[in-house]
Image 1 (spheres, rainbow, N blue to C red):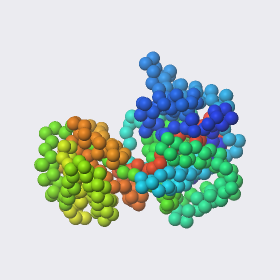
Image 2 (image 1 turned 90 degrees about the vertical axis):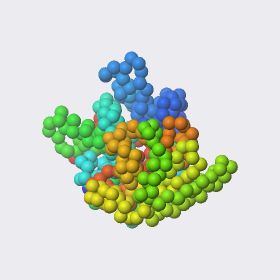
Image 3 (image 1 turned 135 degrees about the vertical axis):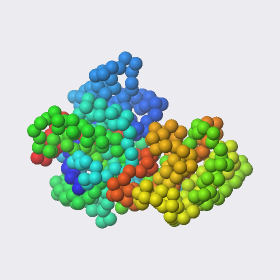
Image 4 (image 1 turned 135 degrees about the horizontal axis):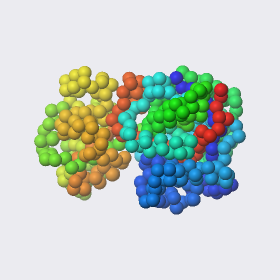
Length: 451
C-alpha cells in the first residue's frame, strides 16, 4: 500500500524571481504552441523551460530541449533562482476554483514522495497510456534527474484525517506560495515540517490504496527510470532517490473533488449516413429529440443539457448533435442488460454501466465500425472539454457527429481501478489541473530519503 515520505523540495525563490505568478505554468500536456510562446515571454525563469521546452531546428541527440532543461535547472539552482528546502517537508496544497455554475469550491491535498510500486500492488491506473509521451518524459528525466511535476493521485479516507491535520498545521499562517493561475484558480502551498504531523500522516497512509487521477504517463516513466537506474546501480538499498516519485495526494471523499467530462467529436468517416446511424442507435437506445430554430437554440440547449444530466443519474445517457441538423438527441440505453445482450462476457461488468465505455464499445466500435486501434490513434476522434467547444465543432464541414457526456463519477473511477481495468483515453478530466512550478523533486541528493 502507500509508502510516503517528506522530502526537501526545490522551490522558486521570490527574492530572485519576483512575482511567483509569472513563473508557474499549466501541466505540459495541456499547453498548445501559442501558450508555450506566451509562457516563454512571461518570465525568463518560467517553469515552461523545464517541463516543455521549445524544439529548435538545429536540435540533435544530446543537444536538444531536454539538455537545455537540465542546463537551465542546474543554472537556476546555482544562481539561487531555485532553492532546496533545508528540512524534509510535506507541502499542503489547496486549490480554490469556480464550478461551471459559478459556485466556489476548494480541493485539498498534499505533495510528498511516494515509493514507486508496480500497478496492482497498492497503486492503480484508470486510463490507457500512449508510448510517445512516455518516451518524451523519460528523456527529460534522464537529462535532469528530477521530477518537475507531481503525479495526481487519489486515496479514500472518509474521516479526512490528513486534511484535518494539515488544516491545523496551516491555520493562522500565510501560505508560502499564493498564486492565481490563468483559469482563476487560487493555488496555495504551506510547508509542513512538524515531525509529529509528518509521522501521523505517513502512518495513516500505509493502509491506503492509491488511484492515479492524472499523470499516468509520468508515473510509468518514473517506473521505467527506476528500472533503468537499478540495472546500472547494481547494489541498492531500495530507498534510492529513483525509487520515489513526487506525488500529490487528494482525498476522494473530500467535498472539493470535481470531475468534468471530456466530449467527443467524430470526423472524416467514409460513407457516413446520419439516418442509417440513428436507426442503428435506436436498437439499443431510446432517442429523444430536442429541435430548435436558431433564435431559441440557447434555451433548447439548456433544457437538453438538464435532461442529459438527469437521465445520467440512473442510466447510461449520451448527448448527440449531428452536423447540419437543428436537433439535439438524448440517447438513453434501453435497459440495464443491453450491454449484456450485445457483448455477454466480452466486456467486464464494471464497464457496462459507464457512459464512456458504452460510447466507445457500442457506438464507436459496433455501430460506426471504428476499431480500438483506430480509436487509440484518434484517427476519427477529437476530444474537447467544454459544451461550447463541442457544439461549435459542428460548424466545421469535416466533423460529422459530436457526443456530449456527463461527468464520470468518482466511485466509478475507483471501481474500475480496483477491478484491475483501465478506461478509454480521456474518460475523466479532474478539475482543476495541478499547477507546475510549485515544488520540484531533485534526485541529485539522498538527504530527503530515510534509509
